[in-house]
Image (cartoon, rainbow, N blue to C red; front, side, top):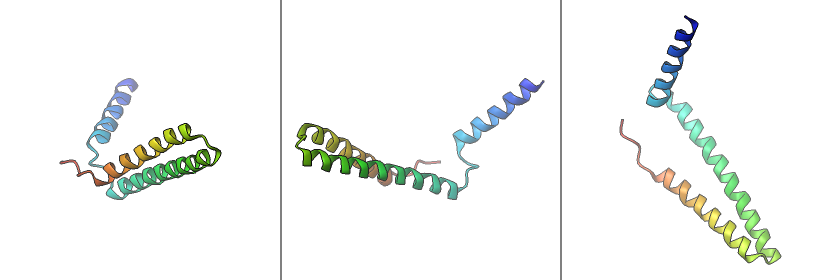
Length: 87
């Protein structure tokens, strides 16, 4: 009996997570804000690493880190400029 109750709870949680209707807009905005801040910190770390590699003369590593940094910036820009999904 307890197994069926557990299964129903998991089904309800799965349906809510998939539909996203019961998640407040403020919580969605907060989550995306945290995501953007985390990504910005990672990009800043890559920029500092890039500057360090250039100063030490490691140009191949600097190129790789620069491409990673540029890729991260492009991904974030596309996420910010993306259209909202239809409901």
